[in-house]
Length: 325
Image: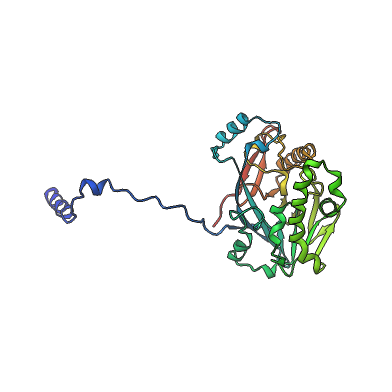
């Protein structure tokens, strides 16, 4: 029996030609990285469906973070096995909420306001099975271009049936012509450039009376508005409660899942009021860690949905949701 097996083995192997040394050492060419699969992820929260939409990823200079040394930033990045050469990675995400009665978009991405590497929200929304015409409400956490530019293109509304909402404080800060005179001269040019992008984005909605503001205490389509000012004067977050859990769309209270979780007291250059932005982050992080709300964040790694954990109440950890197919 043993001899028979050996003969069969030799016979089997002899049917394949021997590889030459050149063939053995042959390597495949490295193919240039292709565009990743469509950037959407659907997450069920109670009886709601939340679709995270990727606009793109970006890298920020470590120098943008305040009151922290470059060496400390690099140490944190190394700890998280994050790319240390390109800078501090951040995502730009938007979130589509299907309540069964309404389709609500929270923030809208940068469109073409910051270059070709961003601007995929609309494409990914369609890839997820929805159409822009189905969106009836857009909630903006604030009016920075990477949140508002995606609502229109060349003067045409990307979401023709939607009404856009932003806080009254935010609208006044960016749209009141008297505001620029209150700023230091060295900041006025940057402010006016941002205002121009905001005005272009919201114009089609203003023309049809579909641009509205709200105040603290208001309720929009079941979303509770939460004052999280600091990053901008009228920055607001949105909380939506279901039968089983609560989800908070936090906006820009955090920009980095590495630096600002290890060091939540670290502000970023984009904060208009850095001191208040830090106070807001510390307050909200402590609340989220204690109460366990589900978080949807536009600048945390896609899909930007998860929870915030703290072992000591001083530093925090981002716990992404577990992927479900």
